[in-house]
Image 1 (tube, rainbow, N blue to C red):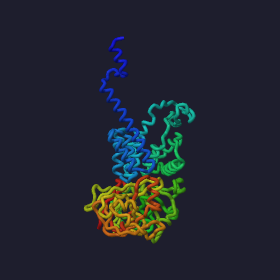
Image 2: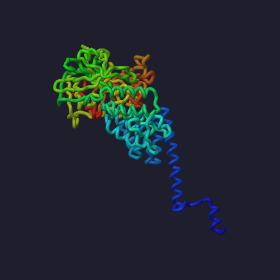
Image 3: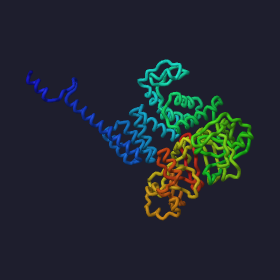
Length: 509
C-alpha cells in the first residue's frame, strides 16, 4: 500500500465524488443549522401549546434568524401573532409560509381561517387547493364498486365516480365547508361534507356535528335559484339601536307584511319569526341541527324590502324572535344574518340621526372624513363575532374590540388591554363590583384610527373572574379579544358596514 493511501485511510474523512472539502463542510453546517431550526420550532410549538405565545413568537423569530426561508417557522409565528391579537402580523407571516411552501398543511389551514375572518372567502379556498392536492401524493388509486374495495390501498370509494380516492383530512375540508357555508354554495358545501363522512375522516364529534348541520342547511336550498339577490341600487329607512341586544334595526316589509328587521352579523344564518312565516304561508324546506343552537326548520324568505331596495330569496331559520326583541316596541319579524349581510354592498348606519341607507354596490372609497377600519369576523362555528381595532387614551396599543355589544358603559375592557394602554395597576384597585371583578373608569377618548370619540364611562374586567363572553371567544378562536364597543358609544357614530369587504368606515357626525 502506498504512503498516500495510508495517509488517506488515516485521515478518517472521505470527500464525496464531485464535492470539495469546502462543499462538505458547508453541507455539515447546513445540516446543523437545520437541526437547530427544527428544535427551535418544536420548542416554539410547545410554548404555544402551553399558552405562552410571547415566548413562542420569540423562539419562532430566532428560528427565522437562522433560516429565513423556513415555512414552518413562519407558521408558528403566524399562530403566535394570532394568539396575541395581532391580525395583520399573523396574516403576513402565514402568507409568507405559503409562499415558501404552498402545500404546508398547518399554514394552509391557518391562513384560510385568517382570510375567512377578513371576508376573503374565494382566496381562502384557493389557498387550500395545493394543500389538499398534496394529501393525495403517492396514493395509488384503482376502480371500485363499494367502500370495502379501497381498504387495501388505504382510501375510500367514490361510488359515483367508481374510483378509490385518498384519505380525507378533516381540517382542510372543514375550512372549505366554512367558506362555502358563508357564500351559500349549495352544491360544493354538501359535497365536501359527503367527502368527510364517506372518506372516514377522523374528527371530533363536535366537528362532525358542525359539518352535518352546515351541510343539511345548504342542502335544503339546492335548486332554489340564486340566493340573497339584491334588487335596486339604494334603499333607506329609519334606524334604531336596541340597548338590550346591541343590534341595529329598521322598518321593513317582509313578504308583503310590515315588520321590524334586525341586522345581526353575530348570527350566521338569517331568521324569520315563526308567526310571520306561518302568516306568509312559508313552507319548511328541511331541518338542520346547528352546533350549540339546536334544531330548526328552514325556509326561504321571498323578499325583505326597504324603501328603494329589495333583498330576495333569503335562506332562513324559522325561530321565535321574542328573545331578540326585548328592546323593541313589537316583536321583530326577521333577522338578516351574516350570510345575507355579506351579499349587501354597504349598510350605512347613521346612529345620531337615526337613519339607514343600504346600497347594492360596495363603496369604492371611504366617505370624506371617515376612518377606514378592518372588520374581522371571529368564527365560533355557531356565531361570528365582529371585531375591529381601537385605541384608548392616546395610547398606541391596539385593542381588538367586539363591535356592537349591549353593556351600560360606552366601552368595556379587559384589565390586560387597559393596563397595556398606559394605565397603572392602582387605577383598577378596589373595584365597585368585587364579586364580578368590575371596576368603573373614565376613558378620555376612544379612537378608531383618525376618528376619536372623547370622554366616556368605561368598565374594566379584572383578570379574575374575567369577562365570560370575551373569555369564550378567546377560548374558542384563540384570538386575543380585549373589549367591547357598546351601544352608548355606537350611538355617537356613523358607521358604514361593508361586510363583503371586511371593512367599516367610522365618522363622527
